[in-house]
Image (tube, rainbow, N blue to C red):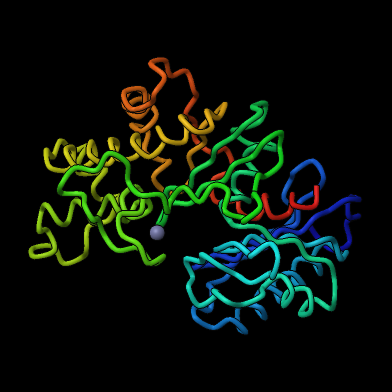
Length: 314
Ligand SMILES: [Zn+2]
């Protein structure tokens, strides 16, 4: 879109402030993307991150020729009373006040922020794979594992802004080899995130294959899935263990909330085998003997972060 074209009324700007990249986009009211820009996150440099967000917002605005409302997805949550960041995977954000600081950096404009996984759930619930479902539990299975809950198209953050922090529940029904489990940045051991993220799958494979001794490059989750499809027995066994752990984790969500749909995002959501093989395993762990919940792939892929952030104003 060029600046000479008329800007649709109600354009919104969303920013996905992630641990590895910062992305900004302008969305028209019908959800179509007018412009999207991304750049690497200046890791461990809070001031540089603020400057990057401001620069991207200004570049997006120069393209759409307007100064729309701005929503920002953060790699963590804010204390709802103090505005101080907590529980951030980008730990250098903890203790900062990103919403206040962004508001000041953007010249006092109103800014809304939310946890990045909440933005993902919001985006998928409003016009993605969760459309038409009343209660959406959306999980990002990427380098980490974050989740968000949306009810009637709105994010449920809760009085502590910790709704959907499923990734830091402990792995349920652990066997002896899974206790205490790997250390997590949150200070505990055995968090689901450490097991069901793509990194968790790759780590489990490496530990059992001792493959780093012979491979030049570390094996990634993509490598494990490829080796499984090529018929490698170890990769298949590790993937089945991954499925079992994911089923154990999600069974607790079904028992507590019984969402109308489970939406999967992040790199692991591109593994087709999940959609056939996960539901029967889930059914074996839920309290209810019946399990009818659809398990579906996110509709917007990597775009859900910026989309959900922009929709914070919708
Ligand atoms: Zn944790």
